[in-house]
Image (cartoon, rainbow, N blue to C red; front, side, top):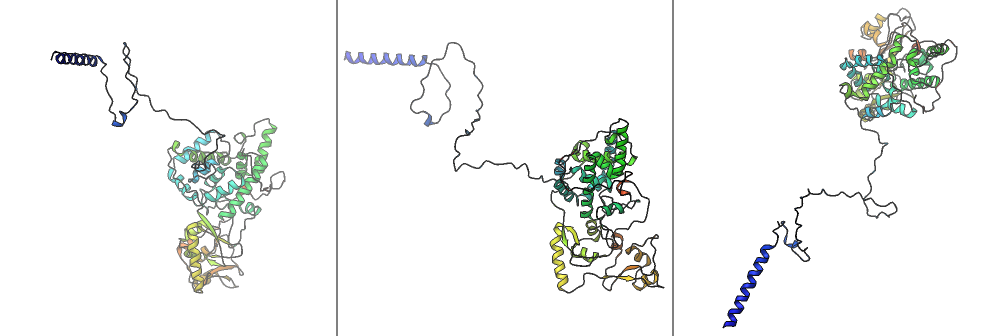
Length: 463
């Protein structure tokens, strides 16, 4: 009996000792863990040091910078590495133009003056830019193909406000403002039916040929632009005069007419605004980097009104793309092409096929030769036209002498005659004063040297 009591007392004492030992262990805060974390090989608790330890902030995760060694073979099933093609053209044509800027900037008070002039006329500037949207893509492509700086795509803004029907008192025509003699030098046809100085494609080629040739002559784009406005030989003489006096021969150092002094600053001002419109507080909408127009072959003579109708577009918009034709009838030959909006080409072709399948004529205007004893009043009455409209449709101005043998264009039975057509047709400028440079009749300067011919080689240097 006593042995049983002794055993119980011994067990009670041992239990008391165990409880005392447990209470002496450090009290730690346990994290919330899942049952799976209470598994084998849990680390043993270690008694803390006597001095308290500061709690450190959580360490951010480490991002691996490991890269595959160059000599390690790439697994066949590895995903392809994405590539960036830096040669892909931007979606915005303005950005493409900016990327092609290659002329040295002109720093002059006149540049700031012209910037202020344009920015104080935002409606005018937006109107110019709106017109340019039809033609810029083509011009930029031509410049890039020749290796010429894309600032030149903005030059028609200075020359004509991008108006393909523009005509000056010096008889300069079109976006690029060629006078008759310079147009002939660069093979631009000028006849009764059309004037290629207004032709979008032909005049652009001629203008770039001319700019290319005078750049090759001077080796400087600012001097080339001055030559385009004033005449290459006039610029050459101004350069020679400064050289003889030991003076600088840069554009801003030459003595030039006021118009030429402002010419390059105008282009520089436009370049600055296009380059950073936001810096000037000007809102420049993106311009799609795709062709606005395409060309179609003309099957034969065709009325302008019919051509516009087949393309399902207003006649004034048709003429804006085909401004070389200044008669109601387009004379078609093997080389004649129409310029149409790219989204109207299929429409034109389908409607033309339907029109010809119905055996309907393409041309309803005809030529009439004035006989002895006839006058314009009688001809106008015969064809049920007013005298003013007959003159307007035939480009007869007060300076034109109308005699027997004079050829008139008169309407046939089915010809479409409208005030809209008469107003939309390009006007034939009357004789006026002549200007120098590209507007001069002189084919050579005072030296007697012929006008330089373009080589057609790309211009690698963009001085």
